[in-house]
Image (cartoon, rainbow, N blue to C red; front, side, top):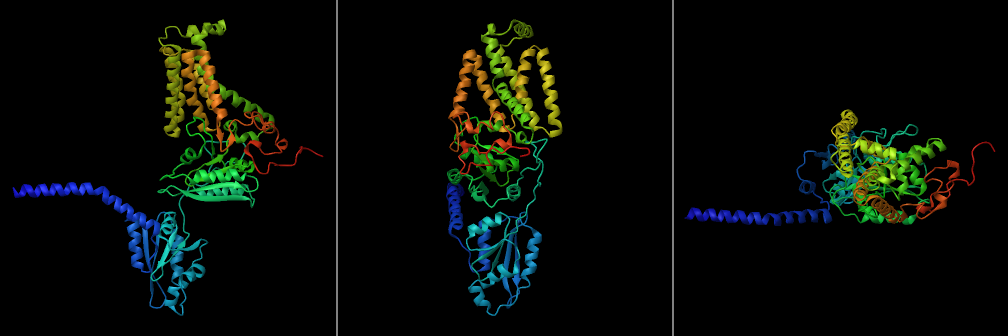
Length: 537
């Protein structure tokens, strides 16, 4: 019986321990919170190292390099850094420099007044970035970014040394926004490199960069870019306000920022432009917009945006003006084809046969002989197959994906016709809509059009042409109701802004666009001398 009681006591104690686990975890979290909020360095080196280990835990990549400074009988100190984020050559140079500190007359007085740290910061360490901090919160944030800090026994302060260095893939050609004529460089995952690419193009003292940190765990650097004197100050303040109210634990991609700050996050249409090209961002900044750079992301967000910008390509401004006009009109026609052709085809063949020319109707009827599915199901099946092939082509390795996409579409299309699952006319309509969708330069806008196409298809298969026109006008009203950081999304057509029509459905020559877009609300709208024309005087 005693043994049973002991077992019962053990079981009870185990249950108590399990019940107290959440409380203990909360207590540990509270301890860490107290440490991060108010903790500062101690004068004792050993206590500082113990507090540091308590805060960051036991991580193999964190190096604590103890050094005895050659002053008096030797003063203990320690360099602490993260092995994979810090530049080891710079750290070795710092260690060598610390061994040649000249003797101080009164070491104890130097320790009390932090004269030793001032001497190290100003004379010994030759790095461009050196500062002194006392708060553990600020010190740990610098450490996690790749900096190194030096703590000295007897001094309640640390020297932060800029030693950031991590591998990147360099400046490469953009894969998603390729051009035949124009610059080939693109952003990469390093924020400093992206800032350099913008500085290289806009050599003005008015170019401003403001950095803030978002994400309680990731602590991601976010940089706001604008040109002072051109941009509307209200726009900059609105961007700051929307970014400042983000409270999340991680930011790993710019879309996470986009969903927090866009005006209508439930809309299927993006209201913020993103691009990989620094020349595009530079042109947007000169127009009076604001760019948002995210550390670790090879693209930039630009606000405000209009719907028509998703149909523009940077190459429109690098080619002859008439060529750009034709290509831009072609994209706009392709937009309507990609959005509405399958839905219109289903509506007119299902409910309005009398509207189809007799010769074309004979072709459609002969092609649908012995096909067991209604027209709507037939189109849905082909759209579904096409989307599966397209998604598979994106996820497969590059060398295999393109071949699989082309071969799969041809083989499955031909097999569907021979198996009497789909008619040749249906396959042709779906294929034309898919190809037209590829002409939209911005990927997320093209993806939104693909999603909206299914909405039109469903309504058209139920209500015919009436449903098609109703759904199309609902979509158009939704676009007109959207705003991007206070700017009308469908400008310059809704509302009509005649001054901005020079760069809308068509593009006029560069010398004719003397003013910045009015819809953006730039402070300085004058871009160049009015009435400037090319050629001899």
